[in-house]
Image (cartoon, rainbow, N blue to C red; front, side):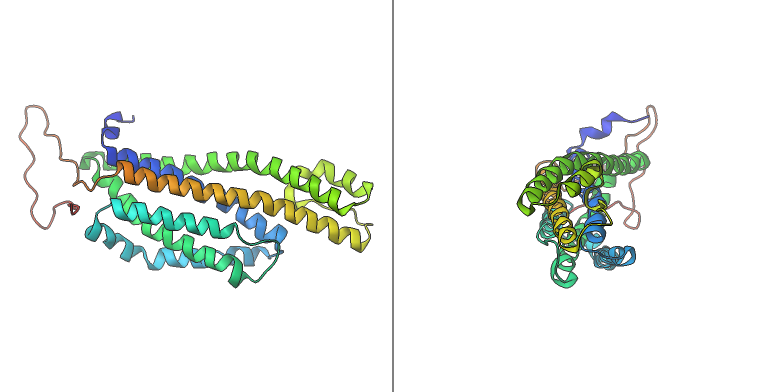
Length: 277
């Protein structure tokens, strides 16, 4: 069912490697971002969803503009620049601590990430489809979509394995520094897999409660920062794959059927996109 000959095109291979890395970074990081907003920064679920509106708005507003980039520069340049900008956005998400105004913490990161993804998405789709013969366009699109979905699932699972030991190590250090009652440590121990959603004993005195909540929040932020920096590295890896593999190629020529005649040359109104050299 999967025509492996499609991967003979370095552009097709590079575009799918880029998709796997960039969408893995996006899917994995956006799984943990709402947890940080809700459990650490105490956003409501509505506010946590609205926090990413700048990201969505930029991708919507700039989609037509980004589609024109491939006509001016070919696929390679936007697919190098876009993931680099997205990597800067992921890195900005790693800066906030456990407090601060949204406009000075998560808003700049959402803007930069949205710009990077807007630069990347339309040229990436065009590069995938132009790298194969027209009769394989459906298969190429399916492969690319599968790469994005599978990468997000793998990233969520992998990032969870990375987050948990970091959270536990930092939480242990924070608890030792805060000198919390033994009852608090005992109550937290079976809930560590809940990360920042850990529930403290209801009869805990206010001072100990505040200290324990601050320790849990700092432990989560420590792991969250690592996740975001890893996402930035994945996005940079996507830019590297574009630089190494993607070429500004025209659409792959159709293969004439055996014993038949070559396809009629396309007229100006139906010609496939030809990337500029």
